[in-house]
Every structure is written in structure tokens, then in C-alpha cells.
Length: 427
Image (cartoon, rainbow, N blue to C red; front, side):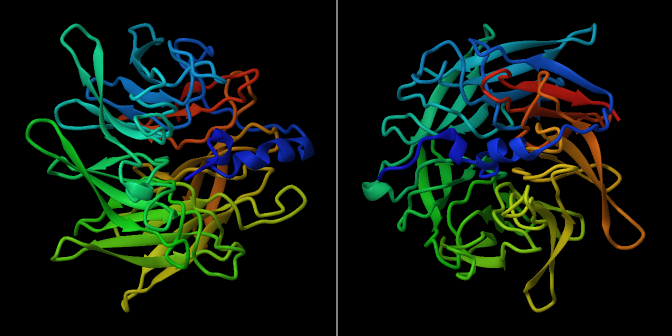
């Protein structure tokens, strides 16, 4: 099975950036105590961080860069890295590369973020590479001398016709017994993507099982976001394709997978986007609030105009009804003036406000935004930060909070003048 290996095809909003930027007039935006913790240099330190960050218990940040590193991967300047940022006592941060991918069986181009297990091991995926050349699931284990050892837990396309899936873009999650869950954007029985599970065994081996193969029809296609569990053990996720057939091949769905007594899983579509005011192409993950409602963003749909011919994207809420159905509500329709084309999920703060990123805005380089519920039952958007390409631009990933309420995230860079950064925003 042949696929487009271009990074720019992933996260559909990036395809629109070059066109949109030509139409935009630079504008002023709020600068909210923004600090660049690290600027990538297009070298051994890494290049173009696509995914977000995670903390360890010591307050260090961990993430991935899609390219860069110590090893050459033509035509790019490196095969990708896993990096760590450690705070120093004087307010600066030190970056160290835990692993540089070599471009062979170990994997190439890690797009997804990382996850820790209880023992401190890191897990992630690569888009390419591995024994079959179409992505792997990997683990990094810390050594006593401070180095880290990478091991490939699974290489995709190991089954005939790639029935096990390939092209993992979204991150992994762990259950309480140490099983890993994720998605592949392609492959499976119908080459429309999969939801998979990796089960560890004594001796160190892992077994992959496909929980669901998308058909590319009403059930969805091309899942690119991470999954989440509810308290009952059901899985929830997004797919950017499929759904209602009137949407030129489908505008994407929110889905649920429910485990059955016989070990199988049943998929149900909670909502199919229309590409109109409700949104279309949900690229990122969804999150729950304490009442069981789901929140997320779509990369397109919503406000349309000369600068957003397919819509600038929406932030949405899905609420369960008593009859088992779900109702969708667009909380906010994005626009280029304040930020457009979100390509990731949302994050709650302690007060119940929602935070996320957009890839472009009136200045052309993206924003960090905040959505606050108002007295009218709606939500009000404010710009927390507007990127100006010095050094940050085009944030693709979401943001995370530390215990003090500070925000952290990555900017992707333009691959020409800037090559990505890690930032902190203090409220």
C-alpha cells in the first residue's frame, strides 16, 4: 500500500497556511508574559516539534521533534528526536536529546507526543521507519549512566495487506494494567485506519491486536488524534474522514469503542460533522469535563469567507442525551483575525476555562487562545499569545499546565527561518 509520506499532509490546516498567510494583514495581539524556553537550531538538538509536552515528577519537560537529531535522513536534516528540557536555578532551561532516531528499524519521524509508565519508561510512535518502513511503537528506558535505550515494541504492516494498520499519528495512552492503545491513520481491513492495542508479555514481547478497522464510510476514516478512556473503560476518539456521505467524502466523526464480553469491541458514532457551522475535520483528541461532556476542536467548518473558504474551524461540546444519543454544540467559530485552523484538542484550567492553539491568525503565525464561559450561555475567546515567528510560529500541538497554572507548549516553526520552540506562558 502506497501513501503520501509528506509531513505537510498531516494536520490538514497546515496545507492552508501558505495560502492564508498571503491574504493576511499583520495585526496586534496580546502578549501575555510569554517566554521562549528553548529554540531548536535545525541540528543535532532536533527540528520541528509537531507534538505537545509532558512533565515528569521532577518538573522536567519531555517531547519529540519530527526531524533533526544526530543522524541524517534525506531529504531532511535528521530522522527525529526525543528530548528533555530541565529547569535551571536561574530561570533558564537546558535541552538534552535522549534519543536520535537513526532512520532504520528504530523508526523515523516521531509526530506524536510521549507517555510515561509507572516505572518511568517513555512510549511513543513514529510515522515512518521500522522493519516495514511505515511506523513503529517504541519505548525508551533510562540507564543508570543517564543515557536512554530505545526498543521497538511493534512494527506496523507486519500482517498481510497491512491489516494491523500503519501511519500512527496520534499519541498513545496506557491502561491500569500496562496495555498501550492508539490509532493508525491508514491500514486495517479497509485501509481507512485502525484503533489498536499492544499487550505486554513476560520476557519483554508485545502483541498487537486491532480493536477496530474503520470502513471509510459512516463509521469514520483516518483517525489522527489520541484516544481517551471513560470511567467504564470505553474508548473515545476522532476521525477526520468518513461520516455523513453528503460532506464530499465525509467531514469526520467522534466515535466510541465499547468492550464486549467476548473480547471484541463495538464502534458507535457519537456525532458526524457536516462541514458547516458545526465544524469539520476533527484532527485532535477530545476531553471530558466532570459532567461527562466531551470537548474538542475541528480544523475546518464554522466561519467561512475569503480567508477561510472551507471554514476556520470550531470548538465544540458533545453532551449525552438520556436516549443514548449525543448533541453537538459549537462553542466558538474561529476566524483569521483572532486565530484559525486549530489542529489539536483542548485543555481545561482549574477554573473551567478551555485553552488551545490555532495555526494561523491575522499576523500569520498562530495563537494560544482561551475560551471562557459567559453569562449568556456562550463562550468568549481571548488571545493569550500571538506568535510572530521570532522564534515561534505555527503551533500544531496543544498546551499543558504545571501546578502553578503556567502554560507550556511547542511551536512547529516554518522550516525555513524557524525550526520550532518550547514556550512558557505565565498568567
